[in-house]
Every structure is written in C-alpha cells, then in structure tokens.
Amino acid sequence: MSLHDETIALHAGYEPGNTEPMNVPIVQSTTYVYDSSEAISEVFDEPTKSLIYSRFANPTVMAVEAKIAALEGGVAAMATSSGQAATLAAVLNLCERGDHLISTGQIYGGTTNLFAVTLARMGIEVSFVDAGATREELDALVRPTTKLVFGETLANPALTVLDIEKFANFAHAHGLPLVVDNTFPTPVLCKPISWGADIVIHSTSKYMDGHAVQVGGIVVDSGRFDWAAHADRFPALSTPDESYHGTVYTETYGAAAYIVKARMQLMRDFGTYPAAHSAFMLDLGLQTLALRMERHSANALAVAEYLAAQTGVVSRVIYPGLAGDAGYDAAQKYFKNGMASGVVSLVLAGGREVAPTFMDSLQLVNNAVHVADVRTMVLHPASTTHRQCTDEQLAAAGVDPGLVRLSVGIEHVDDILEDLENGIKAIS
Ligand code: PLP
Image (cartoon, rainbow, N blue to C red; front, side, top):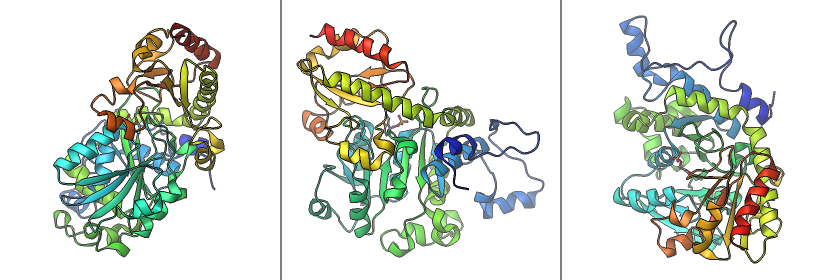
C-alpha cells in the first residue's frame, strides 16, 4: 500500500502491538541486557541486528529515523544531535584529508563556515559555485579528489531553489553523489531523491520539529548510489574496514552501505547521537508536519504578496512561491503544488540602518535566531547569522545587508499582516 505523507508521518517507524503504547516509548536507557555472554558476543558480529549502546542506536531514535527515511523515500537514516552534526557526518563519510567537494554558495551560513573554515583545517577543500552555474562551469570544478556535490534545496537565507536535476545529472556524470540539505522544504514539499539526490540531510530542529523544542539532524540514504561501481573513488565503502571486523560495507549492507558505514564508523567514534527524549519530541512534531507546511506556505505567500505591494519601503521581496520571483519556476517544478515553505526575505529600501526600527516595531512577531517555528519570527542575517561573513561572502550567499528574514508561522494570517503593517509604518 502506497501511503501519503500525512499517513506516513503518523504511522511509519513504530507499530504498537497488542496493549502496547500508542506513542513511541521513550527508551531512556544507555544500555541493553542480553541473555548470555554468547548472545552479547554475537551482537558485535552483526550490530545492525540488535542494540549495543545508545551512543549509536536507541529504539526511540530508530523509530524516528525510520519515519523520516520513509518520508524522504530513502532506504535508511541516521539521526544526529544537530543539523550541523548531520552535515559533518554526511561529508566525513566520504571525504578525508586531501579530498575535495563542490558546494553551491547559496547555503546556510553555519554550513559555509563548516566548509570554508573547519573542513579546510582538516585538509578537505571546498569549491563554492553559484547555484546558477552552467554545466561547463560545474564540469571544470571536478578533480580526481572530488568526493561529492552539495546544495540546499531551498537555501537559507537566500531562498534560491536548487535545480536538483541539473546538479544530480552533473554529479552522476562524474561518478559523484549529490548530497542535499532539504531542511526548508521538508519532504512534504520536496522529495529530492525522486529528482536524483543520493543523500538527503536535515536540520530537524526546524520544520520537522516545528515547535523549537529540540536540536537535531538526520542523514537519509537513498540507497541508489552505486558505490561499488565507483570503488576507485570510494574505496572506504567497498574494501575491508579494519576498524570494524574487516567489513566490506557494499557487500554486507548493499543499498544501505553508506548509512551503515556512517553509523559504525562516525557515530561510533564521534557520538553525536540524539537523546531518546529529543527523538520523542521530534516525533510529535513530525505527526503534524504535512498540515503545518501547508499553512506555513499559504501564510508566507500572503505575507510576500503584502510586502511586494509596499513599494518605496520594501525594495525587494524574495519568496519562490511569489510569481515573478527568480525561483518561481523551479518552485513550481520541485515543490508540491508550488508551495514554497514559510520563509520570506525582504530587502528594506532604507538598508541596514532601518532594519532595527522595523523589527522593534513588531509586537506579535518574535526576534529570534531561528526559523521554521509555528510562531512567526524575524531576523536580520547580516548582523546575526552571517555576522562573520565579509561583504563578498554575503554577496555570494545572496544576503543583502538590508535583508530581513521572516519565518512565517501558523498564526491567523490577518494577525501577522496587521503586525507587519506596524513595522512598515514605522519606517515609511
Ligand atoms: N541546514 C540548514 C538549512 C539550516 O537552516 C540549519 C540551521 O539553521 C542547519 C543546517 C544547521 O542545523 P542545526 O542548527 O540543527 O545544527
């Protein structure tokens, strides 16, 4: 039976038996007990079949992993204690010192820093490229050491829509996997795997949770990339792992080779696994994700239309759900019914100087360094999330110094619009 997202979000990952709890139980235990010393020894030969320790597997977290894998159409997933940890794991599962990856420039500021600073310190080089680059420009970036291509399906905060097919075709032509961050659209609005992405990551701290109650991330494996066919480039997946009983991941785990390797090597060694309680909170959020994404998108479109009409005060509105936006056609193609999620950016004609007045005149809308919550929030990226960026880096990330990011919540739209009107009046 092929289920819809609304149903998957309620039922996938956990099936209660007779008299068992309807909600996924919070298994608040680091450890698991075995019948005998022999039983515990056997688990080390095949750890994916049982539970050893909650640093890399826990039943509550596993239920959420299965649910998100089902929503994305992947074979398996590995949850992490933050979105940053998910990005790091997705990259380090393929790259080591001396390797290289290609990323679009239009990505989350924290990811830019991870790639440009921290990965560089670890000896992994990143080439940033404009998401609108031609195929020739992309081809020219590939090196023998290149291990993956990275992009954000709906970039935070630039709100550019990734041409997933273009990047998947490019990556695959060079025997590379496409890794995408699908945090902003969520699988409800966009299914990157169906357009050719190989690995999908998320900050689950955002819409998946939706209520700002836990920080988390996840890496989803499509199971489609043929690592064995590209064994020269990815020997770690298809030759014995001496740190793990000589396991050859592609032989033992087939389509799930990538995600099992991530869990058995990286999660084992780094231990960035979420707590069971966080996974339980995330699961509650997921149950209403489909409903919320529709309301977020409808409210955001109304806000974008209102702001676009404030000519003179607002010089530009960026929202790919808005007709005429640079990302409109791509949003129509890649996002369910063209719904473009809840984040709207506006550039104030008065620039950086008027941003504080605008923001401080809002009463309902919260000032917060967060997006994707049920409550509407506002942020000035150039003085906060992108504070560390030079003007050149700001331009590359598509962030104007006068850009204000609104994360439109699910309040009644009339109340949001009335509050925004206060802000617009204050700077008119
Ligand atoms: N990816 C995107 C698109 C984000 O917006 C964020 C955080 O804002 C992250 C990754 C990092 O996630 P986290 O804050 O959960 O570490």
